[in-house]
Length: 264
Figure (cartoon, rainbow, N blue to C red):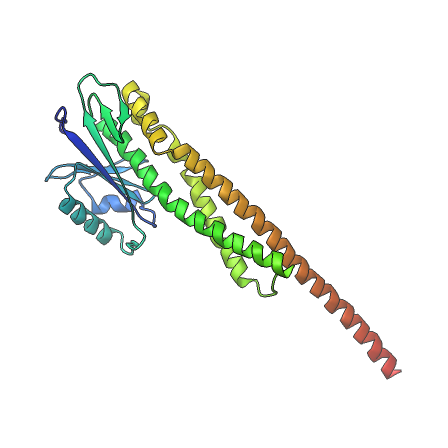
C-alpha cells in the first residue's frame, strides 16, 4: 500500500449487506485481491483500498464515491442477489498528525501514521460496527414480535392450535441467534494489532467509540429474553395439544365402551 500523506484526512466507508460474502468464491471474481481468513483486500488503480469481510461488509479506504459504486456493482455481479434495500453504511474519518498518540477527537480518529496494518484494523472495526447495526435492527424487530406474542398469551390465557407461524418465527429466531453468536469472534483483536502497540490502541479506541462490546452484550440479552419467552409460549402450545390428545384418547375409550354395550 502506498505511504499515506502526513496530515491528510483519510476516509473509511463501510457498507453492510444482509447476505454473507464467501471469500473463497469471491477471490475468483477479484483475482487481484489478497485473501486471509478474515478478509479479502485489494488496491484500486484510481486510488484507495477495498476490504471485503465474510460477514457481509465491505469497507472502502480512501475510495472516491463513483469508484465505490463501480466496485459495489462488480461485487453484485460476483455475488448475485445481494439485498440492496437493507444496506447499512458506516463512516469514519482518520487524520494523521506527526507524533500524535492514537485517540478520538470529535469523532475523528487521530494517529501519528497510518500504514496498511493500521488501516486494516480501522477497516475491520468500522465493518464490525456496520454489521452490528444490521443485527440490532433484526433483534429489535424480533423483540417487538415476541412482545406481541406475550401480550396475546396474557389476554387469551392460551395459544391457538395452529402454531405454524409460531414455529416459523422460532426457526428464524434460532437462525438469527446463531448468526449473532457467530460474530463474537469478530470482537477479537485483529492480528495486525498484536505486533503494533499503536494499532492495538487504535483498535481499543475505536471499539469504545463504536460501543461494540456493550452493543453485543445488549444483543445477547435481548436474544436470551426472546428465547425464554418463546420457550414459555411453546410449552403452553404443547400442553394444550397434549390436553387435546388426552381428551381425544378418553373420548375414544368411552366411545368404544358405549359401542360394546350397544352390541351386547
